Amino acid sequence: MMGASPCVWHVRVPGQPSVIDVGKAARSRGWAVEEIGCVRLASGRGRILSVVSRTDAVRLYEDMHCRPVAVVYEGKPRVRLDPRATIRDDRTVPLHRFCRYKSFTRSLQSNAAALWDSAFEVWLAQVECDGPNDPRILPFHIFEARGDYALDKVAERRRFRQEHHNVRALVDDTERRWTLARPGARHGRELQTVRGLQLYDGFHWDVMARRTAVVASSITMWRVRSDGYINIYPDGHVRPGRSCKRTWSKSQSEQADANDRNKSRS
Image (cartoon, rainbow, N blue to C red; front, side, top):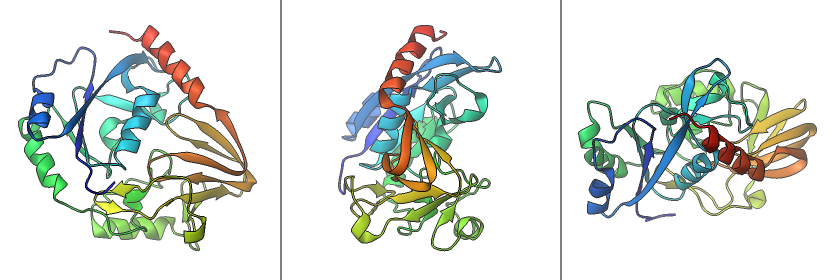
């Protein structure tokens, strides 16, 4: 939404006291504030992870495509790549990586923490998206890249396209083909904005694979047959297309979030 007021998301981690009054600094500049917490869960390998809930992860990621967002946090919060109940180390990512390219992020325990608000103001003045083919538009918690890329650099964006482009589509590391929907086939969502660039109405990819494939968002999972496809939007929204079946629902994620809160370790 063009011209929308910025919002600051403050992500709190149990046991990590906040030494900066984020709300006061944000409201003094007319910015909205959202505060969310994490749960502390044991992974399959026994590590204790601070994890953002599935529903909060979806709300946060979608908000980044509606208005300018700053994400500030204590500790080391993580986000699931797989919404199912059992948490695995290799199926979570650090919060700052989940938000990469879509929002401003700053650890409140970094050396630059005290200047987070001034840094966000500088960030707000920049437009950092080249157009509809800029790979930074992709939801990278769903698109599985073939490596790590510093996509803020022109040369790295060029390398990304060379390593993923195949006949008018991007092919990810699981061999799923992401094809931009034609103008007449764009449907189903409000206008979305990425780093100051407003995308076309209904902008999305038709995603398919040669073999039956799994698609996992922060809150749902789908199985897509080789003769089918599924619509995926920049904000991570997944819309069923043809020959696809939901295998994990939003209501299952909401129940799993409630269960996580009950067993969270302080």
